[in-house]
Structure formats: C-alpha cells, structure tokens
Image 1 (cartoon, each protein chain N blue to C red):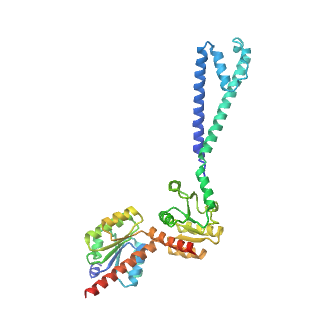
Image 2: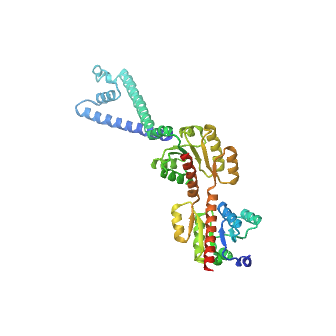
Length: 145
Length: 266
C-alpha cells in the first residue's frame, strides 16, 4: 500500500469519509483529481472498496498514516471528520509534516474556527452556517415575491 | 408554554405557613409578656392574646372571672377558641401561600409573548434551537425577518428569553404549540433538529395545520430527503452535504488556479 501511494503527487488527502468526505471524494473523482481517503470505520472502508477509491485504513490523527498517504507531495488535505478535537490534531500534524499544504477543514463552532485557523488551516467551513445562509436566501427570495 | 411547578409551589406554601406560624408565636409571646408586665395574670393574658389573635374579639371576657376560668366550661370554650384559631391560621396561611405562589409562578411575560406571537403574520417558525437554528436566527435578525423559535429544552428556553426572542417552550410536534406559534399565519416553518424522524413528523403535522406553509427542513440522511419530498415538496438539505460541496469545489478552484499558474509559467 505504501509503495502504491508513494507515487502520488499533487493529490488531495481526505481525512474522514462521512457525508462531507464522501461529497468531496465524489467531486474530486468526477473531475479526475487524484485523492486518497484516510478512514478508520470498517463500514466506511467497505464503502470505499466498493467505490474503488484509494484509501488507508487508520486514524488520520496519526502522522504515520499521513506519511503513508504521501503528505509531503500532496497539494491539499481536507480534514473533515465528525470530531472537532481529531480535526484540530490532524490539522496541526499535517501542517507539521508539510508546511506548504493547503488545509481545508470543517467545524461547527465559531471559537474553534479561529483556533483551527491559528493552528494552520487555510479554509474552514461551518456546515450549519452555510446551510442557514442557503435557507435565508430561499426565504428572502420568497419575501421578494 | 406557561407551566406551574407544583412541587416548588407546595414547598413554598409549607415554608410560608411555617413562617406565618413563627410570626404568630412571636406575636403571642410578645403580647403575653406585655400584658403580664401591666399586672394581668397569666390566664387572663393568655386568654386575651389568643382571643385577639384568633379573631374571637367579641368574646366577653369580663363575665369570666379568675374562679370560673378554672371551670370545665371555660376550658371547653377556650380549647374550642384555640382550635378555631389554629384552623384559621393554617387555612389562611395555606390559601395565602398558594395564592402568592401560583400568582408569582405565572410567567406574565410568557403570556404576553404568546399574545405577541399570535399577532404575527408571514413570519418564520423555527422548530428546534440547534446549532443550525441558532445560526438561522442570527441571519433572520440581520434580514429583519420576524420569527418564533420552538424548543422543549428549558435551558434553551431561558437562553431564548434572555436573547429577547419570541419563543415557546414545548414540543414542536404538538398541534397546540404550533397553533400558539401562529402556524396559520406563518409563511415558513423550518425544522432544524438532527433527527430525520422528528423532522419528518414535524413536516406532516405542519402540513396538516397549514397546507400553504412553505416547509424547510434539515436532514441527516439522503433517504430522508426522499421521504420528506414525498410527503410535501419543500426545501430539504443536509448541512454536511453542502459543506462537502463547498470544500470540494474550493479544492477544484485550487487545482484550476495552480494549472493557470503553471501554464503561465510555461
């Protein structure tokens, strides 16, 4: 597995294959951008096998798994696990392993957003905030009618 | 909704009765001491104070002298008067305490709020003050759109009161609560809890009460979006799905920018 991924270059690492991770993988797959997923959950591993996506089984918080995903040659990393603490640890580890890496992540807390940016994330998405903005757009459109 | 906490009301009533009794005992002892100090004997002092305190002031004690005070008839009358007094103290104490407790536990502000909510028209009802609901209220305030929040968590209810939002405490699956939230006059209803089952039931209830209301709901699973659309076409979304899109397309943009840069360099 290690030999296989060491050939990857300018790829994207996706940490966590939940709803967010799966959506990112779908988009990257559609546009033929190379990516690799790091996931620990067995059910999701089965899903990854079914989709024939590149994956590493294990926790993204461990630097060994990030190194196996050839993080030094990667272009970006999407840290999108459903755990604020794990996301923060992974962002710090990823930044440590490749300082020039573009780091995208998710959080639900405004305070944590600031901390994650300080820790090295370049782009932080807040699912609840984005969703509420979409809803507001819908309501405002309705109000205008 | 306005709720009366009966357990706390009972506790407070007992406390108030005890306080009332203590005050009565103090008044008795003080008056008794004062009467003795002005040369009344103990029987006469006790009798005078008790009859005065327990509303037996029309009892003519002048006909009772020191000798017949020790008679059986006097004792019967005296015991009856004391029993009558104690009953009055307990009864008045309980009635007063209960009345005060019930009166203070009625949240007048909440009552007035329900009145204000019923006056709303074309407003938004937010079911569930989750992280998403909270974000939505912030955006609605910025857009100056009127809204009512329904949440059953008393802690969140207090928080909403502090924020001075129009809110109702209760289950949004209750037709009564939705009616109090003015569903008949509302333009939108948003279900924001992280449970497909609750949101689904909420959509069914809302549609039953107001067929013309616009429904917006969050979902956790893709399958739930299909069910929701089957029940009533509306705006259904999965926040994490939107976030995935956002990150995915940002990474695509990054790829495109890099390609443009490398082509320019060539």
